[in-house]
Structures are given as C-alpha cells and as structure tokens.
Amino acid sequence: MAYVNLVEEDQLAEFATLLGELGGENKVGEFKKLEGPGDLIEKGFIPTLPKILETKKKSALDAAVVMCFAALTKLKSAEKDKYVLMVKDALVAREKDIDSMHLLAMLTSLFNLLDASSKARFSMFMVLADRAIDADVAPWLLDKKILSDVEDLKTQWNLSVHDYSTLLLALLNLCQAADKKREFGELLLKYLENLDEDKDSDAKTALTNAKEWTIQAVLSFIKAPFDAARRMHQIAGLKAVTQLQNTEDGPLVKLLNFYVEEDFKGYLAFAESKDNLAYMAKEKHHDDINIRHFRVFAACKLPLGEYTYQVIEKALEVGEGEDIESVIIDLVQSKRVDVKIDQAQGLIHIRHTEQRDFKDSQWKELGTQLTKWKEGVKSVLEQLHKARQM
Image (cartoon, rainbow, N blue to C red):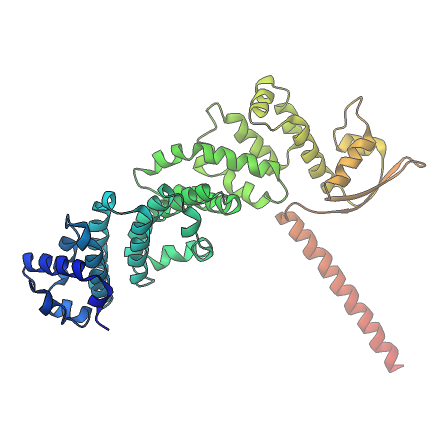
C-alpha cells in the first residue's frame, strides 16, 4: 500500500505543490506513483522535510507529517537521529497551529522512531515532558518502565552528570503533576545525590530551587524514621541539606542529625530552645512525636531481659509526672518493641526489639554469635560421632 493513500486527495495536492516549490515533483498524478518512503529518500526529499513542515497551509500539514514519518522510518540510526530532531523542532515551532494532544501524539511517534540507545531520545523526552505537564496528561508519559529503569537510561542514552540531573528534574515535575508521591520520594533522593556530583554552573541554582523539596523530603523521613533509616543517612550529608545549616531552616538539619545518630540527650537539649520548638510547630512536627521516636530508639538498644521501672524510666528519659505505663504502651504501639509489664513484681520484660538498621558493631556481634553457634553445633556432632563408635 502506498503511503500517499494515508492522506486525503486535497491534502495530497497541497503537499505535491509544496514539493514542487521546493524542487520536487509538482504534479499530483506523478506524486501518487510514489510507493513508499524509499522513493522520497531516493528522490532527495529528506533534507526538505523540516522545511515542508513550515507550511502555513494547515490542510497540507497532516499530509506532510505522514510523509515525513514514513520517510524517517527508512533512515539509518545516525541520519535518523539528525532528521527526527529537525522534524521535532519544526513541529514545536508550529505548536500554536496544532492541537496540544495531537502534537503530543506526533512527538511521541517521533520518540518511538528512535533506537532505544539513541541519545536523541533524551532531547525528545524533555520536549515531551514539558508538554505533557502543560496538557495535564503527566500520568500518560510516566510509565513504570521509565521510572524503574531511570538509572539504566543514564547509561543507555550516554548522559552526562548534568543531563542526568535534568532528566531527573523533569521526572520529578511529572511525578508531582501526576501526584505519584512514592515515586517522587525515590527520585528526589537520586536527584539530590546527583546534584552533589554535578559541576555545571547551573547546579548551585538547582540546589537552591530544590530547597522546598529537600525540606519536605527530610520531614517525611523524620515522620517515618524506621522505614526511612537508610534514606536519612544518605540525605544527611548531601549539599542540598548542608546548605540549610546557617539559614532559618538550620533547626531541621540539627533534628535530622539527631535522628541519624539516635541522639536522645542531644535532642532533649535541642528541644529546650523555644525557637527550635517554634520551628517544628511551623513545620507541623511536634516535640511529643520526636520523644516517642527517640524512646523507641532507646528501648531497641537495651539487651533483652527484665528491668525495674526505675531503670526503664532512666533509659527512656521519663520525666516527673509522666506515667511509665503510658510510655510502655507507646512502645508496644510502635510495633518495634515486644514488651510486657509485670505490675505485681514491678518489672518490665523486653522480649524482642526490631533494629532500625544494622551498624558495624552489630554486624560484628552477630558474626561472633554465629561463630559460637557454629562451634556449638560442631561439638554436638563430634559427640554424636563418638557415641556411634562406642
């Protein structure tokens, strides 16, 4: 089937005229004899494709687009990349004359014409991202493959550190527009980490622009300190966070570091400042929530066993007038500590704790315990072997 059969007769006439003006065939009858995009290439029409799309005649535009796309499918990679980007620029220049969804569809078709490893895909994706947000169709562009394979795209498209930052920023804007909060959080950490490596002159501006996102990320981690333990360690040393130290958001950086180090006493001293309490209240994160979190951290550090009320009160910084049993209930509700109160004997049994993350010292202790277990099993097996020989 001839590609020219995909367009209307009057559109075809307009297109034939355009080609004639640009040095091509000027007769509709002869133009109809073209059996495919290969003929367009052979007759030397390819360099004129972007020029054709500049036509002011809307009736000829759709026909021109169809013929351009058909021809591009027959080009080899390097040449295809060049002309796809030229056609993209020509279409974008005409976007006021084209319905936004129609333009998105055409740009998407151009994107799909490119080989998966083509760096031109990066340029095409950036154009698509901007227009998907403007057209309020961000979810349509955010398929699972792009979000899950974003790190692979850096290699596949041979992106520089700065280009990768640009890609991540575009994806963050798309996630925000599509209300994809989980994906946004995962990408934000990648973006802030990449900005640490980005030596481009725009990186400092990007860090400043990411300030509100950074604050929201830190607050979200603090509100879920067990699930976000690894992320808190990662973000604490990033420039996006450390640049806040000597600003009005300095208290947030201090609070984050207390959480990273699980420094309960340090936090209590921090909370004595009215300014720090006012800052937390402004960010809707209050002292009592932090106290609960740090008490869970402290309980998880205690060896399993029985404790008197007085020992637990000291370890968990329970003040005068506070009810120790209410504190224990908070521990149970955290689902990180299995604890039982023996009111008759005035004892508290800590039966199991769930570690927030494993530190080097804990791995070392685990290794020692496993070695002892291995030696114990070996001893039992040796005894069984001797018993069989008797």
